[in-house]
Length: 194
Image (spheres, rainbow, N blue to C red):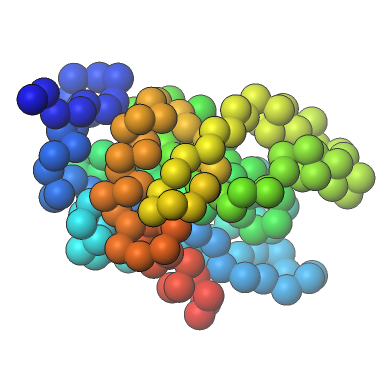
């Protein structure tokens, strides 16, 4: 049997049968109205959920710096991180991560997960109303969400640099219980205390 391979470059291809491959999971901290800054939390973990590194970076509320901040986190550990897993696409309000650009900057495949029912069109309307930022709207319009099944639950994903079959397999292998993988669950738990 040939193991599933992901990545577009030979030095970024990984065999999914190895539980020791590393993921970078990212989520954002809560913030209050009027705050200018917030944090994202990055957790490097093995596919089996073993945590190896926790880090944070400051982002601007409704800003345009989250793609760069996540890229910086990933590039520090480019030799070991094989997949970036994001909790959604929007961090610190409407600081939208451009997953295609993130993939281009890092060469690391990106999986952005969100609950079924999340709507890019609702975000577009809110951004139009409050910010009028056409760059953010353009990023959101380029997204092509797909439904994935994980433990009998349907979750939604946007992908860059990875096929849906490989993304689904990674999510399943990184999920201990419930619908979301550890790469989303653990950064969320840590970010809540910031």
